Length: 206
Ligand SMILES: C[S@@+](CC[C@H](N)C(=O)[O-])C[C@H]1O[C@@H](n2cnc3c(N)ncnc32)[C@H](O)[C@@H]1O
Image (cartoon, rainbow, N blue to C red):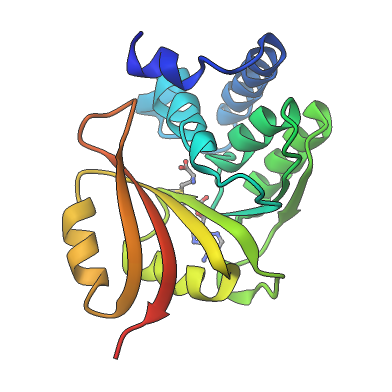
């Protein structure tokens, strides 16, 4: 089994169907608003959908809420909500995206696919939210900034899942100068140079 087919190995046919509908909507809206980099439009399934879907198995059992920050086109938030729709876990998702047109796209996808999502068209720094069990982010900001957001948005026993490219080692070293935290690195099933950072116990350093 390839790493990518492994990502979808426990996923139902209905889930794949909804993910394909999401992909169609994403490509249709990309013609008018800049949802994804044009260079990635030919490979949305692997570059964006599979890349996001691999986070689902890292969401701890018993979690109830997931906050996805800087969601953009809904990556990973929408993809995780689609997978969760056909599972027993029934997570409540909050997606924060400051660009109003992207937030409109997220609301449209949520309505069409009947997802359990609240979209907040706001800046992350400005929201006053109940702390989540899980915080996710992809392609948003350096790790130091993500930890600052995690410090205010994540439950004290919660888990942050951040998709990071090849700079992850430098970002970890820099973040450790300001923050104390526990972390685990997971290989990415879509890009050998990327990692998923699973982070807990975020506290400001001395
Ligand atoms: C590079 S895109 C990545 C989007 C998506 N997570 C992905 O992987 O394709 C970053 C997104 O975060 C949003 N964003 C950046 N700073 C933000 C902030 N402070 N509050 C809310 N959204 C923000 C931008 O509008 C943009 O849609």
